[in-house]
Length: 114
Length: 112
Image (cartoon, rainbow over the protein chains, first blue to last red):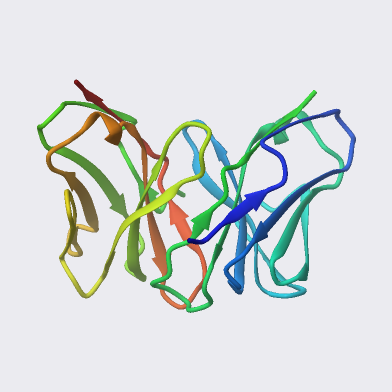
């Protein structure tokens, strides 16, 4: 069974802090993704990575960056946290074919920015 | 611009009856569609998928129907069970990309 592990279930940070969200997968997946989930907006893609050190912007990358130094680990960085980044953050991974591969999700990190 | 739409935010169904969840899309380049189920405090779990070359895919109590001319897909759950109560997301894959576009979700409540 694929396991996608997010380092924190709940996180509270202050405005202006640099925040790191970590995600690890154990299935040797090439693709990894970061989403945020907000009520009424569904899942919106922030960034994705299709290989080590490779990344592409998703639909809402502003205020975020990512790091993929190892295949199994994908980090989301909030450079200077703001209150509008309070959200549920979901990490996912999948095999590399362009389509026909479902993504496997972690259980999410609920981040509150005060 | 919402390319994948789930117009019903919520749905209530009696146990044992059929649940029908709907999803509309606008991009004719989408070639693969999926449904995910999400319980509170958990990540979405893959449920069932369908390729654009098919119009139906069945897996146990779950069936997904695709109507390409109407750009519409639906998920049927028969019979519905209380454990099916969750938020359901549909998602579509753009041909040749790694990305999925998700709908806003429908909260299903199955009443015992």
